[in-house]
Image (cartoon, rainbow, N blue to C red; front, side, top):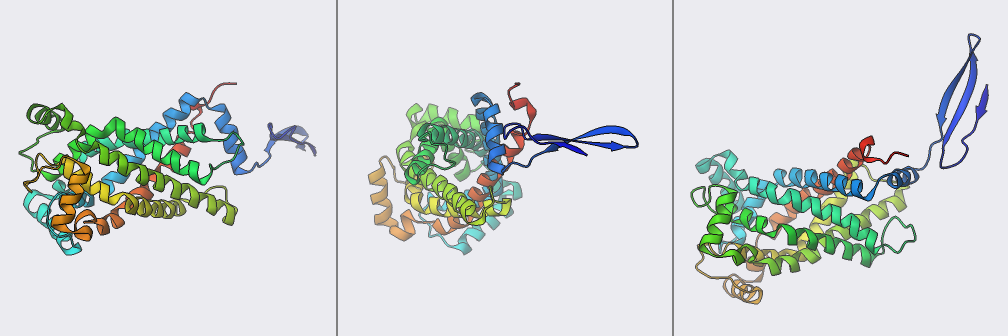
Length: 342
């Protein structure tokens, strides 16, 4: 048997020649490269345009799947956020049960169409821009992970980029989630009624607290997820976490992110739904909204109302989202279509 070893690390292919029944045969032997080396090699063959396309696609799929799973919990959270009712697990279950009984099981997903229209471009832009911000913020030393500060900044910028482009869809989703079917019959009717009755500027009502909230939320979420993946690689010796480990990392990221930004989420929802809320108070500024909520409902019962539900749905949603994105991006990037011909 004659073996020709691989010529170099860039061409990790060897050939084994042997005789079988008097016939000379040859078998290709591929030298096993470390996981991160193979990944880097594939990335070099992929153009920036294709990297962006694959990230957008994987991000949209991740966002849609995660939000659909937790849609009933999301609707319940929004209901308590924009009302002056005290939140409790018992009341949350009662709201879900009454909605199912009075309006039907599928009404638990009311507004989910608007959510998909918003969350798919939002998640696509967030994950894709996060990759691009990481490239822009990298120091060029070839390190797999950014420094902690740059990691946080990349996540914050990714969230800001996504929310700026998709905010009107988020407002429409919130309106549909807290009203009955007679108020807004479709996503188009939300926009047409808002513009006609409240003005175009209303489409961006609550935008400031949203941006202020997404900076710590996205920054903390991406920072925590990337940091936990980094620690996993250092202590386990594995190049990448397994799916269930990604879920745990994502769940921790979601828990930290939600806790860091929740008060501003309350402010955002109050301002978004001011035109349809039955509370009889007009929320026009961030400071005014915070002051009114604290005065009338307290700190824990006001600006932190529903946080315990977010500690349930947030880790689930973020864990599913990060895991789905990583897996789908890996799957999509194995398609030969996205690689440049040599």
